[in-house]
Image 1 (cartoon, rainbow, N blue to C red):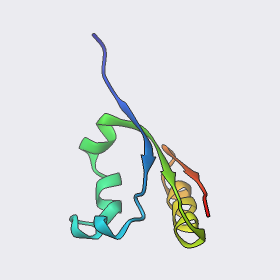
Image 2: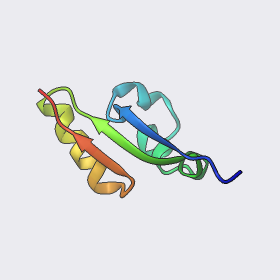
Image 3: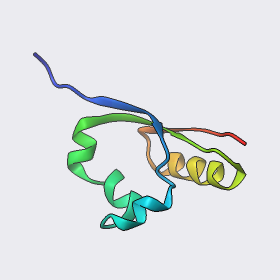
Length: 70
C-alpha cells in the first residue's frame, strides 16, 4: 500500500483559533508533519474580510486554493 495523503476540503486557516498554536496557522501550514499528510487545502472565506485572508494565504502556499464567500 502506498503513501496516504489527505485533502482538507473545508478549511478556515485564517480563523483566530489558530492563534493559540505555536506560530499560529502559519506554524501549522509550514509544519513538515502536516505537509507530509496533507496534499492540499481548500480554504473557505465566509465574508469579505476573511475571504481576502483566504486568498492571501492561498498565494503563500502552493498546495492551497481559496474559495470566497459573502
